[in-house]
Image (cartoon, rainbow, N blue to C red; front, top):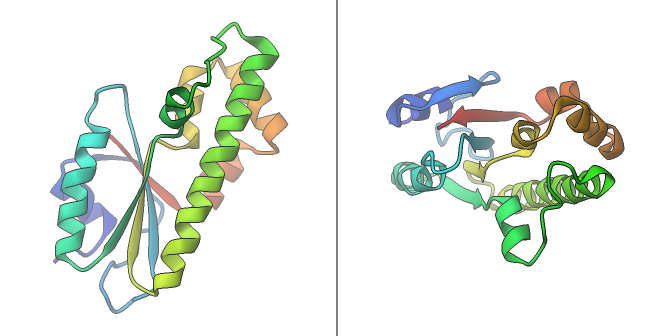
Length: 164
């Protein structure tokens, strides 16, 4: 049986980028909620991996929730990316993206809490992925206007990230 998130990573040959202390996923801890962000380049297999992860966890009676990729939601909804040279428009666009990402993660978490069952929430990308698409000075400005810090993101999310 699946015992830890590290076991999940080994099952799918995923490389853990950052993993906080992983607890047992046994059903004995029936209200445990784990948050995982899949990260990696375009067409790297993140979305495709979700089906395999879902199937594996469901075999072990673990609920799984999948948070869709927020930039895709925005772009397919008609939002236009202002471009890397977008200045303040880019910062406002990315801030809106972060706000939506946080809201979606929180909403999925709150819903998972209502079940009282062991659950895994898998994000198709996370907030830290934004930093890969911005020069460092714009990323730092975005964190500032969002009231966030890298330390806060790394320590308060309780999330494990897997690079695919």
